[in-house]
Image (cartoon, rainbow, N blue to C red; front, side, top):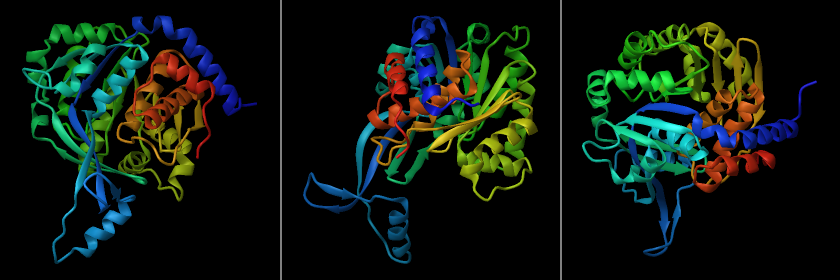
Length: 376
């Protein structure tokens, strides 16, 4: 008989609390992107110089834009928050906040760190190799629109990593780490080359051990099927040297399934456990995890599982929710939690973040999991 959600929360909270003293001895290395994110509301009606009503949904904004076709239109954007951004920095900052020993390599400002990353650099060891990108994140009740300026991302390339980190240091970091994360494949034009170079020049000679390698594609819609397939096949090659976890949101799972020739699903969100299983089996990876907003599911070679998250209708912040899920799920995998407990840790990390707009400490997270709210 499968344990209930409450029983899984209780065991996860207990195990995480017990693991708190050991977290600082668990090294993680994450890379390679970096963005300055501006979290933005789009004004619908303004009452005065302070008060305004925001456009609540993407569809409402879409209707306004559609009606402006053939004319012109002006939209006021209010910056609610400026924060560190990028899949890698957000995930790494969450891991560091929880308590892992984190090294981050990415474009956080060069030669000087951008001030938005200063607090992150106090929590983690940061090796910055280029200037950050910039994202305007328009947030709505039903999702977000991310408008990125990516010119500096071309500097995230193998030659620059080797020049500013050093191949020996990179090998040392990988060999010590219990978790290696290489994320945001879509936005980094040279990520496939970096993955291949890491595989051929860094991983050989490093004992397999029990480390985990986490990758995400980060909305690959704009990349060609051939590019996506090449990246996925590279991850399959990684599996020969390290246990690979592929993280996908609901949209990405559909796109990857399409690229792999898997059958479409009438209700993708209701089929996430089956999708995770099918993608994992097709790619022969250690683990595939799929995380829509209301929960998550994962598959390994020996098990599949699904877990309902603490979805909230009106989050304080939504940009970075998926990266927090990835941090929590990977933490569970590194700590040896069951698949259900790892999913619980993932959805709880994300749930805490969207409610508070802050990354949890391990103590915060364990307490939140113990009383994990149901989905709204």
